[in-house]
Amino acid sequence: MEFKMLKKIFIALFIVLSIIGCRNENVNEPFNYERDTPVLLKEKIDSISSNREYYGTNVYRYEWKQNYIYHIMIPISSCAYCELYDSRGKKIKLNENEFSSFLQTKSNKIIVWEWGK
Image (cartoon, rainbow, N blue to C red):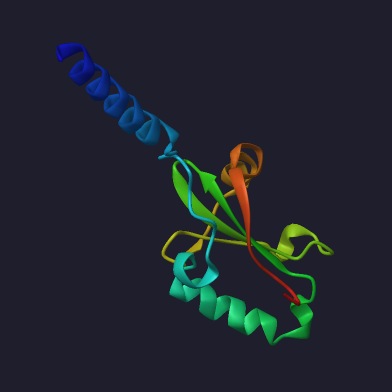
């Protein structure tokens, strides 16, 4: 009688641990423009999308120094038109060394918006 009870407990424990072990807590939800883009940045993107001078523009989100940084880029031009925004959608001004550091150490690139999409 004891052996059957221990066997049932072992099987139940095995099933519970298997279910828990199969869950991946580190999986991030996919990027959602409406949910994940700061309001101020959406306003900037709206103004870009209605201006032909910004044709080809892409907006990326990176991680840099443990923060999300949004990078507006026009790939066919120099970075004279590149702009950086913080996670609240406020424009960031970096000096040349800081911008160089950003370009070299940014990670986890996600496309937020691109012209024509």
